Image 1 (tube, rainbow, N blue to C red):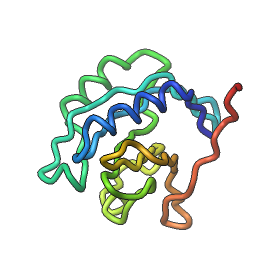
Image 2: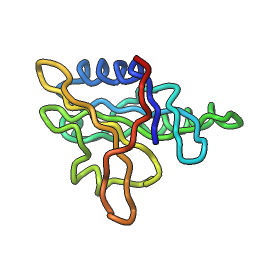
Image 3: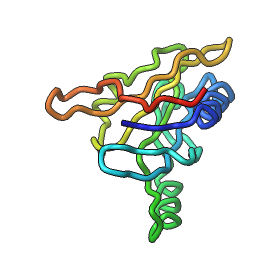
Image 4: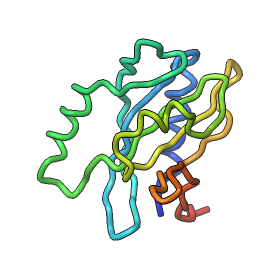
Length: 141
């Protein structure tokens, strides 16, 4: 289960809208308690993909720097996010092919010229060898 506050989702939506027509990307920082992940921060990263309009690659230096900052704290990188310009709010086949860390959560925001549409949260099910919707913690009203 993943718990991410709507304010953090709003930050991702903002970044997706401003990166359009390219994909935005970044990392989810949080804590783990058994099967529950709580996201406490989202950190934008440069998209260093050679084709940023239809793929993303988180800048390796940004990730390394963040990992060093988190070392010795209870927080860690628990997932990442990116947008799909003029696409669906779900991981693509390309995303699945580039999967390196199956224990991380994926947030995908659909964005077009008019703004951000849906946002999906996924985890990788190794038994099914596919992304599945993640169970989200209920949000306070």
